[in-house]
Amino acid sequence: MTGLMRTWSWAASMADVEERRRHAQLMVGAVLASVSYMTIDYERLERFPELELTGPRKITDPAEWADPQWLCPGFDTVDYGIELVMTDGRISSSTWDPPGDIEGIGLRAVPLLGTGVAADADVAIWDVSGQRRWRDRCAHEIMGVELNYSPWGTGSGFWCPAVNIHFKNSSVELMLGESGPECVLVPSADNIIVR
Image (cartoon, rainbow, N blue to C red; front, side, top):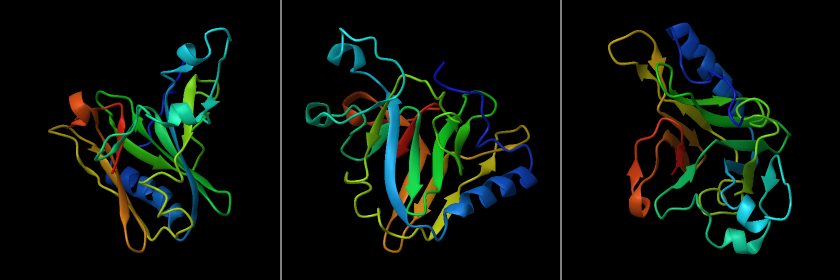
């Protein structure tokens, strides 16, 4: 099982919304050291057919980095989640709540493996710290984090479809969405877009 039952985003009340916002604020003032994407390991069997590889796999082969599945011209698309490591060792992660009545995107001060994704999941781990969306943000202080909550339709509760992480001169938006044909951004309840 890759995913775990989790509720990082959905909030039944404004008190729950505020708890999630307080948790996200733990990143404010920290300096970002590195960022990793955790995705479906699309190339595991093709690249290693003779091996019985299981569990997380860090992507290091330059050939695999030449054309990653998650890279689109206007955004990155991440199947499972994002892990942000601070220079003081603290870790925050972002992933989606399961689609349905409680979907949304959340941010928690925990590692992604073992909390948002099973610790033994067959995922690809991409250290994107030096890639275009993150290279100018690593080694910089996080100035603010916004969880963009809104009421959930006509029912009760609140959902968060987007998170903004602010740095001194830039910001990164994390939102529910994925890549459609020809890298066009389309809605999704179980994928994260980084732009």
